[in-house]
Amino acid sequence: MPKGSIAENLNSVAARIVTACQSCDRSPESVTLLAVSKTRPAADVRAARSAGQRHFGENYLQEALEKQQALTDLDIVWHFIGPLQSNKTRDVAANFQWMHTVDRLKVARRLSEQRPPNLPPLNVCLQVNIDEEESKSGVSPENLPALAAAVAELPNLRLRGLMAIPARRGENEDQRTPFRQLAALLAALKAQLPDQPLDTLSMGMSGDMEAAVFSGATIVRIGTDIFGARQ
Ligand SMILES: *Cc1c(COP(=O)(O)O)cnc(C)c1O
Image (cartoon, helix red, strand yellow):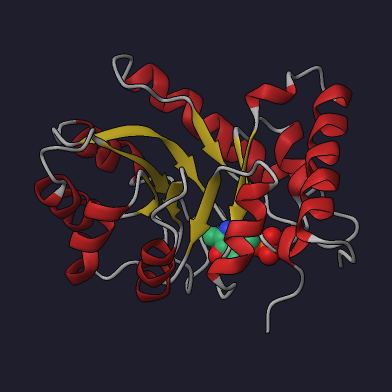
């Protein structure tokens, strides 16, 4: 658990990203740090923004909209990373630049239809249920190619890549396995849909960030190690 201020914690997370990138010959600029601010007050987002953090991820729509209202003076890139009911798509379409958890066509269609015409297309990642867990959201690897092909047709979305929340592996298992699987699925999608801007692997959280960077993550989603433990 981090003990420092938000600014200090951001520095140590950034340093971990640099170290992880160096040990696998990647450029640190190829990894974007997404600060996950769910359950945190707007003041914490403001503190992180003052420390230079620009990308923020939120899971709960109502909470996110309230924070956005309190922070309209700041230049922030907002990412929605939580589960979304299809009747709540309008607020995501209007208030976020990124949506990481698209896992069915109905939600994608609505996001595209509801994206305000004055905004650029919404960046979307498809969430993959990489461990094929019964209870988890996400499209199955088997159904991913069909979903991706359909989403690629939607005019007001930009299909940027894949997102996953793999189960934590035990001590003797390799946490990189599910991340490598997600990377392989993205490579296959690039071959399937060569005209799409598929450049994003949204994977890795506080506990498994290094394994994700080693496996090609381009966005790591970090909450606890920046803001401290959640209630
Ligand atoms: C909460 C959350 C995170 C951040 O998790 P930490 O373990 O606190 O870093 C990342 N991604 C998603 C989808 C989350 O819901």
